[in-house]
Amino acid sequence: QVQLVESGGGSVPSGGSLTLSCAASGVIDSEYCLGWFRQVTGKERERVATIDSDGTSSYVDSVKGRFTISKDSAKLTLYLQMNALKPEDTAMYYCAAAGFSSCRYAPIATDYAYWGQGTQVTVAS
Image (cartoon, rainbow, N blue to C red; front, top):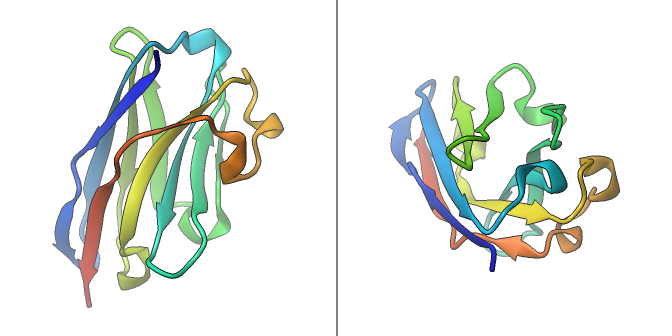
């Protein structure tokens, strides 16, 4: 059984940094695409960053150069380092896992079968 538990959210001023963590269990690292999504109330869930089983990463344009996705395979933990945060980054952030080794087979939220409970990130203007 796959379980994902996020932590690390909080409130920061504009320009600040946060690191989100996602502890995974029941995941075989070599068989899963892992990702971070975010959602604002009333809007669709947005893919922020993904990482393949081989470590290849991908980012939505709005966070390129500011966010970094990484994973510790030994600890089965996914991270999202967020720098230069902007008010528009304010959202609930979720980690997710899809049963594909490559994230190119999981471009949208409905491709991900497993989700964490979410962690709130608030960036003050």
